Length: 309
Image (cartoon, rainbow, N blue to C red; front, side, top):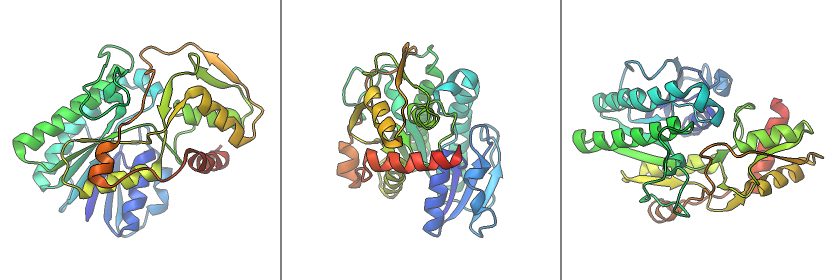
């Protein structure tokens, strides 16, 4: 296959580049390096089946030759980005998705949108299944990301219905692993960086809010299975094991052997209280469920962070 991965130099995108090169696919990695890093894919420079295009997908996109599949992963995704890069997040969710879908139409390529569990907002249904419409504050700080992804899903389904594009939508729950930005701002990079530095781990609220954490290799496997399926409806990919933020902080302190303590801070606005995927559809339709335990995945991630500091 010949695959275009937008946002391919980002955390998840770079792992997808690795995965498909290993499967002998031709990979075109497109990234404007706003939050992605060339270092994430630099080892592939010179590979005969890899090419890197430094480009912003909110502009008109041209790619020479045929494309079999487009994976649209371009977007800042970390909480600190929501205020700093809010307009650019909205633009890539709207204009970028429109441009990439237009390319899929021209190339008659299959298309997969990287959506997110953030489309569920601060959910009133637990766990979250794909038929739940969500509880999002459109004018809050997080709204720029939540609504960008909700709009991208709507645009994707419109192209599927009106133009017959063969589309997929993956709703990604909290994912972690090697190559996360050290200053990412999400819980796991924050906790690991603080623990390795011997600093207090910053937990917001009372630490009772929950997340499910999935290792990146499991996510990539789920994405590949979704690509091979015929599912056009959204599919949750995440780990159905729920942890409180306090439990997660304590686990990382133990795994790093740090003497850090937990410092509690006020809960940010619209921060979801619970986040847990219902993965019944992925289990039933894709035969997928996570294989890497939180302890094993965190050990690998901690080792990578220790070298990258």
